[in-house]
Length: 612
Image 1 (spheres, one colour):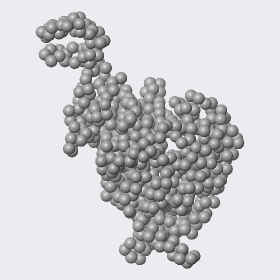
Image 2 (cartoon, helix red, strand yellow; image 1 turned 45 degrees about the vertical axis):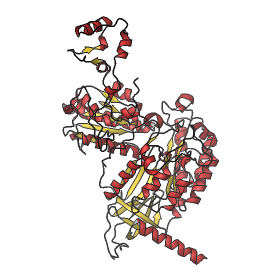
Image 3 (cartoon, one colour; image 1 turned 135 degrees about the vertical axis):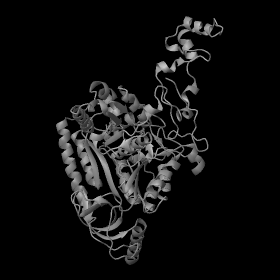
Image 4 (spheres, helix red, strand yellow; image 1 turned 90 degrees about the vertical axis):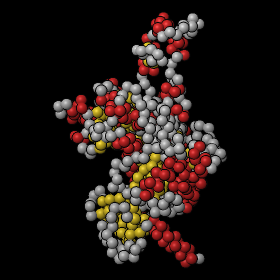
């Protein structure tokens, strides 16, 4: 396989076919000579026809093809983009030898989006929409109007995949009932499932026309052009560099008050149960300047909440030359949480997640910032201090445990013990008072005994999380567990354990939430409650959902005594009741991030004086 240097890959066009690679035109001859089927004799004859002497010592056969094959220049664009000669893949026009500009154009064809899975998939869909819109496509919210149906998929668990398989079959069935629709509409499968099951969806089931992996979204216009000619098209090549840093996502729900910003992609942890490193590739991070620019743009658009995203978001490490020049060089090694280790050698150099978060929260003190999804090994004190010291950071940390048994954690290759995890929890609660915690747990992993399971239950009872994400284990191909372990816990037993762990988790969460009744919390109104349009719903600074009646309230910012609240307002809400998943409260006043926290800090100071 040809190895293309990094500088070339920044502007390289899509690779032509093998036949096109070896089809060249002699400087003085027509028609072109096809080296793919040219023997030594015919090559010599062609050279004589052109008046070029034949070298008897010249290499022949395959050696000749290699010697006269394409050079690096054949893979590089002559355009370098702007400004200042900087390479810009988004603005450059990538020529594809076998497709015209008209073939690549969207020509106002309509695209319908469906997104399954995590917030990263939402952000990936928005990146894809930005690329397709630039190519001339339009968006529709009606699948019956669509020329292209784009499905962003999740492959983390079997249940998610089965849901998507059902959707694909139903789509095919629906289109077959409309004359000509089946051949007209192109179905595109994207994301993690695309990379993992490309052969099944294209060849076995034949349910889609285009398969696009997480690092190939730039190739969408070309792939759709190929599919338009009646062929199947696929690009699931993973990248060591692709971050889409130069693509500004177009939000699918612009009426929402919050947005996601992807800061890194991939994962190097290689947990034995996890498919992510095989569907998303190795870790790579965007340079800090592009992230800050995107955050500033979103703040200028009036957004009130921004969540930084990554498969292992707090392992962010910017080693770009641009950031070294702008923000300075850091060569110290990565500092893991105490008692945590990695499967790979410690990484040195680069700007870390604490550096990024510190810069980001300074963009606007009136915008609230969070991040997901982290790994517990990447919580050094520098990061915890940034969260605690900045009022516009969510006072919420997601700490995935996966199991409460040290033995199972070793099988999972999590890099820590039960004891080190509990020490980290205690340390976080000490560093960030009133912090809210959540976690992930898997029950029924390979080799998990009933005693191991009881240790998980006891961990949940000891820590007491605000909310969590609990799953029965489903084995994924390609993973370490798939190749080295036995999925030996019966499905029926897995479900029994899952139901019980859910009950225990919810009971402990309810106990914790009851302790918050009477507190005053800062809530960002996200919209109507799911159950009633007479109630607002939003999240407080600990990421819990709060619902409260729609009433007029005083405004702490203007002094007005009676203002109507609206979506996107920050409101001080007094918590009056709760259930396992939701707080209920009463609106007290319209406020801002800065004003609310100034009041809280002053109240805490006054309480200290009274107690003294």
